[in-house]
Amino acid sequence: MRRNRAFSSRRGFLKTAAGIAAASSLPDWFIRECAAQQPATSAKPGSGELRIGLIGCGGQGMGDAGSAARFGKVVALCDVDAAHLSDAKKRFAGAEGYSDFRKLLERKDIDAIICGTVDHWHALVSMAAMKAGKDVYCEKPLTLTIDEGKRLVEVEQQTKRILQTGTQQRSDARFRLACDLVRNARVGKLERVEVWLPAGLRQGPFKTSPVPQGFDYDFWLGQTPKVDYVKERTHFSFRYWWEYSGGTMTDWGAHHNDIVIWALDQERSGPVSVEGKQLVDMIPGGFTAASEYEVSYTWPNGVIHSCRSTTASEWHGGVKDPKRQQHGIKFIGADGWIWVTRGQLEASNPAILNDKLPDNTRRAYVSNDHMGNFMECVKTRKAPICPAEVGYRSASVCQLGVIAIRLGRRLQWDPVKAQFANDAEANKHVAREMRKGYDYGMI
View 1 (tube, rainbow, N blue to C red):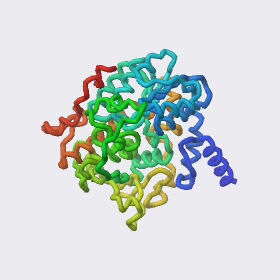
View 2 (view 1 turned 90 degrees about the vertical axis):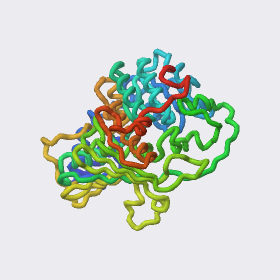
View 3 (view 1 turned 135 degrees about the vertical axis):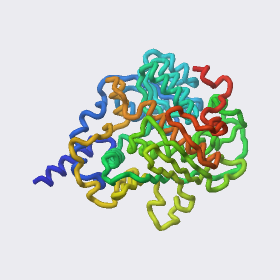
View 4 (view 1 turned 45 degrees about the horizontal axis):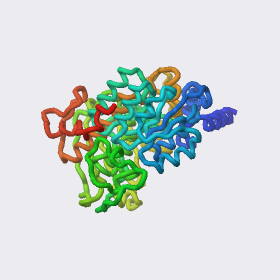
């Protein structure tokens, strides 16, 4: 009889909890706990009519806006690519289109915006939106540079707006359970963390070509240096150029390294040292962000945190160890290990997962629906699961890795001052020169 009730509870939870797929890798005690928490952890679809603007109508932005539309109405759209904007207007009928995000932000009837732009526009768009009185759901990584992160946190604090970073793994129960178990020493004293990320693209050289009609390439470049149009610089593959992103280090790394700082309870701090190197040379005239790399961080509590890309052959199944073909996180302690990735949670001993945590243990913030959590916080004004400072710290861990990879040496980092210790060369990478007309003055 107890087994039937557990099954019924689990089945009901799976129908309502947006962050859970199959329950097979989650222990029954945790599934029941999640089911009990669910009604209070996300906004109810259709409750109220929030008015939403989407800035950046590519694939990720459109997906985010579709999720947000469960809780309100998308009334405005913006993109510098007329083709993207046209597609978005077909999906969100009646929404007004703009090519300049500042014009969209002038509208007084918009409550919240979704920032789904390329990475180098995240900070400027989010800061401008908060200054205009809008709450913000911004895709990850929250910023292009560490300096942008500090500025963004200041704007959030000054304006009292809600900002949610799109690190949606925080609203996945597997990742939350892994963090709860690590924080409560279920693997014993934590000694090291291993993060595996997909290898990036290594292609080129690329040719210049005419700018497509309807694409404002100069505006797309924004703060970054002006260069001739190369289609591989834009849209999906922008992330493989140092100028606009950080390769898979800031793409997938913004997800998995974020879970590391959550488990370490270091969401408002950072590592004290970082060392990195590029493992293969990039092709001249092609993508610039390292496709294969390794980075090692040391945290204030002595935990060693490695972040490595798979190699191209490993990513395509050329090794015997299946973990090396996946990206994910392995927490290793004196008494065992926990492996977590999307759709999978494993431990060295089943008891690590299956033994219920005591009721008096300190637990992580609960969210089972990342967009729902944002919308709930827009209405209640409570802090979301990943506000600006947490998103900034998650992004900065990845950016520290990028800097270490590019310099190819060990760096000492002060997480309080947010600068490198006695290293002028490294500190030049904390901020970047912004192209005139596309700097902070434009907002």
